[in-house]
Length: 611
Image 1 (spheres, rainbow, N blue to C red):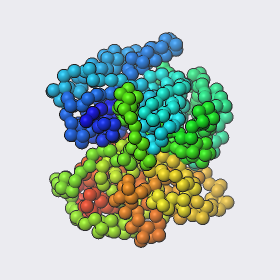
Image 2 (cartoon, rainbow, N blue to C red):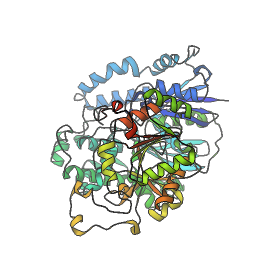
Image 3 (cartoon, rainbow, N blue to C red):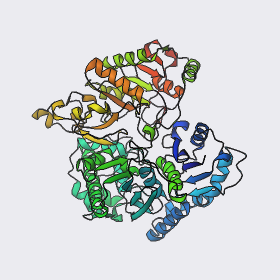
Image 4 (cartoon, rainbow, N blue to C red):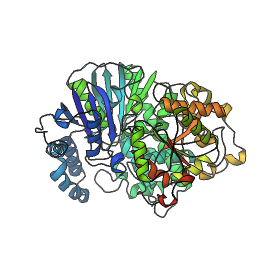
């Protein structure tokens, strides 16, 4: 039995994964263990978990691989500072001591950290380094259901590359084309994330959620920031940006072009201007992605497309690519960001470097992305008792029936079952659930449970067999990475008066039979649920359909704003007691908020740093 440990760390979203004979056994992000969102530190806890799950000591692991090459990254930093000298000196002076002390000699750093897991781990000869974009591309192609595919990776920046095209066939994968730093679609989007007052590397999905409230009136100004070719390739005009060498994303020229300074999230509200800015950058991003995809379809003539990198989490753009029918089939890695780099690095080593054959699963090899820790009934009950919880234990059928009934009564429910998801989305293992038919559910969940901006949309989880009855879409979307429009017979058309409303005023209009998951533009980020991937979740939605006629439930991640998704039963109970969730369903236990000790209530509004 041959094993490979994959690691991504030291930038954001550190993670670890383990393969046995090429099979993905376990994977998790460090943030879930440390409770520090996007934790960039060495993933000690994640490594401990994957080793334990695979029943291996570190000294028994055959090969260890890191997701990028630090020397190439260092070269890019040095060359960038030289090219922009002298104006980059402040950030150069800040970055260099850390690089020289820690990051440059990463093999030595990794070896010293790895020894902490196992005193019998003696040599660094089994540590390897992958290329950042190859790690991303491998994470998308090798687990995909395709023998052959073109892989488009777009993110902020790896070593030098920011956008790459690779071609995968069987167990081979080769990068064919690259766009290099500082020209980056990910950094362009992050510049607007910063400009609208959200946190870079974490708030990009808020910018995407804000876009439908605005109109793309700044589209032409956004295009002034870049030289955009017909095939989707681009160059960014560095006159407007500060990220290459400075400590901010944008500069005064950027502010002058759009007419305002970056929004200060501490004391400035989101206005129509910010909504229009969000709409404009989203539209340009979609255009770039669609042009790139069209040109690579034409050039390589392959029917299948895989996507990875942080930009692949832009599910609105993904939905547009799908709708254009450029490729016959699309598959997107659910952990498309840097966390997935740990998985891709391990798969690249197994298939490309070691030449191992690949067997293709017609679904995919990600096991629904349920690759994290799980807790048995005894462990759950023990943790709940220690926490002082009051709970009832039901058999399976009773649990499903009661939970479906509570959902139909508009109760907000914390749902904790099976293995935790790998990647940023909750997929029915660590989720908060609600009734999509309720026109109060979106606002209540955002303000009373998640403690976050009221404009943020929620996703529908729908039985796969009912998908095309409700949405303009008929492909699997197990990982909630595609956006589709709701079917016209399920819409409630807006009056002329409602159409004239601006921005957030549009939020509370009931616009479909499932208003809690219908965004202001009649779209939704869809998750399809099948019995073979998540039986318990499938059974719950089926029971809800039996009671209500509706095969859809609201699914959002089990956490509050600024908190990583819950990992342990104790995390789940803390979040339950710190929010206005009505019930917690964990394993076969069900907890009613009204029956809990009032003294255990927590103030969760200030518990986590806002993102």
